[in-house]
Length: 371
Image (cartoon, one colour):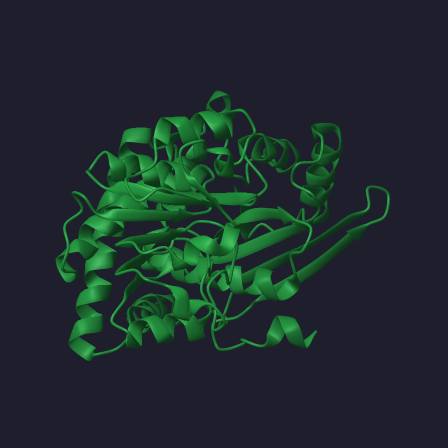
């Protein structure tokens, strides 16, 4: 139990639910961190090696992310143990069974995350009658992965951060760690503004070319089920080798803790914009800050997906969602960096303070300290 409670504080977590359903061999966890601002939105992550601690950390990130974005939602997360690439006939019963198992927890709204997509959210909606976002278009959804909502926010964060770095986006060298739906669209948006993608990595390997990679070719390879490491014109590298590629902008868009005390010394970049949730350990962020590397925290930079989900939940249009993402992420990035410079503290510390202040104000209005 201690692994889940190593970061308990006055904000939460409010509730931790472990689910085991033997008929489907379902093993899953739901962590509702804080709902003072409203019902919690948080994605359902599917992977074979998730844990209670990871789920709790991600749930807290959602509390801070939703508060920083000014949404009237709290934070939560759910994780399901399993291979996300399993056949639909196996995956659908698992997700439906999990949705049924947590029925009655009205404070939690499901969203897609790593290993789940809009079809998964449709199954959840079918079981729970509406407590899901990131739905297919046919059900009134705004398809986050197809449109790149999270990546659109990352692009806006980069624009705001350029006021605090000594390079321009035109010609800036870009590295993407995690060339999936978020990383792919982040590359697309930034290349349209003049950046040069010099390296990309996915779960099976990486590729590098100092003069730039052909984004269309990488997209074609991924569409055919191949790894970016199959890119014919680049230098094939091990998956984690991109940590040491020299660049101006480094975007992590995969799993937690990919940069840590053991490899942070290899990083050679000037700006990190965190597309994944908790992609760096606290030790790694501290080391980069001390070296003068600007790191835009995850729950500030990658809030585009949940902002889009919240707009979808209120039946807003795609255009309104993307306008809200650009405005909120840009404004929050600028505010965090200004506070960081003014108070001479790391950006994450400034971001946590900003979001935490809103959550605490909301908690003061509630009958109970967390609920």
